Image 1 (cartoon, rainbow over the protein chains, first blue to last red):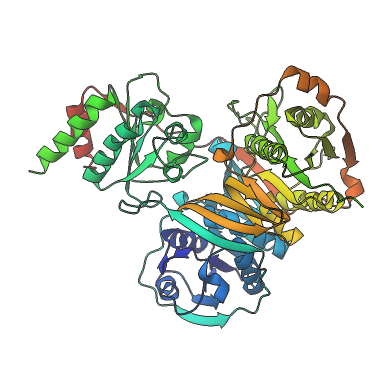
Image 2 (cartoon, rainbow over the protein chains, first blue to last red):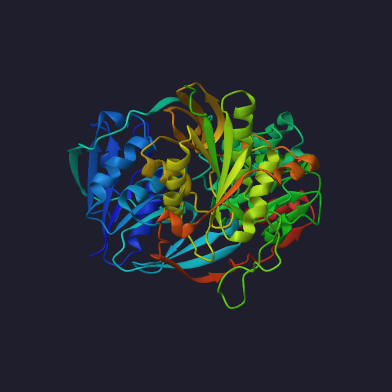
Length: 317
Length: 254
């Protein structure tokens, strides 16, 4: 019997959409029983949110005073405590899951599969290596407990409308005191979240200054889009690091991706190749971004972007 | 009685150089490695640099580099020594492939041998992209982990580490000893000068056969096929902004 434990990612009383995507991934295991584990201090609305995800059979709310901050050092022993009966333990391949799951795997003496992009069977999975330039199929020996992180860009979110039972247990795991949360300097939240937005507008090195990067924000706000940036733009200080799109930043799969002044280094393309429609605006007709773009235009972004904004405005009048 | 030396252990991995565009073997058995340039994993180079900076500020007495690799990877260790580390440990694998959990067990043996107050590693190796070994070592060692570090500040007994997370920048305080994994913006590694390369040739380098450490390779995960990623079709080019807008409208995107 396939039993999957999905570790919920949440913050500020809200379930992260990465959890729904991980549940959807778990649903591709035939006949699996899916249990979502939510680690809270108790009385959180997150367990009820998880219970609504289609395909979830049960929600396990594990409470402990240490769960105010979701730290790998204190979560891992609690995950290991509840993971024993399960055949698979999944979490999203976000910085949350990437930090936590190897610690869990080591405690469980289980191998981990990172960034799973498709599930072929209970024991066979596909995952990218070399920044997505090769895709491997891996087979795990039958009977081995499997810990995995799920590449969220490869799965849709599970639908709502479910009504799973919520069970609450107080954790009795011995938790270390050696790791303490200090602060979280959160990114500005007045725009859609980059990881889950349906439209993303990204700027690159060609913007040439943080001031000019505001052009990207302007277009994004017109389209209700999230804002991203290439590594070059982030390294140059035009945009903050949490906006970085690419293998070393965020891997995204929006409906529309507009790359403005981004040449398209391989590590950037890795982060966007699951986007439905890619639009490239670049003055260099030889830029590699055009090799993957669905719609390309060669020209000066400082002319094209304002023109595009005017056309959008005009179409709405 | 003198205090034991305050030591940082840095684990590095030799990988295909990040500038190489890798190619998948036509028979699907893996990635072509013959004649391909190999280098220290870029995140690990940042780890070496961070350890050296801590030592140069007086925060450590010694930086020890470790790798788990075939015998011919010694030059990678020498490169790290040329950056300024004092000595190196080479766990020689001779063809055995180690999954991250087995690698973490090997590193734990080295930790027990060297008693470092800090272990620094890259957050992931750019070949297998696993992003696991540092966290697994921290779990096996039962010590704190601070992953994806973009800033590290040390006291005698703690490290305050700023981490690059999806939500922004998170700061943790961890008790030492601890494991730190590096992100790209932690530092910019130094260039190695020729005299340093010469000097590194005589620095101590200890080889340890994998078998002598009592860690068995883990055979539970097998790669059965390696394929190139599905390509994207090249799309259309439009001549001006009006045509771009028309195309976006046609597809219902604006």
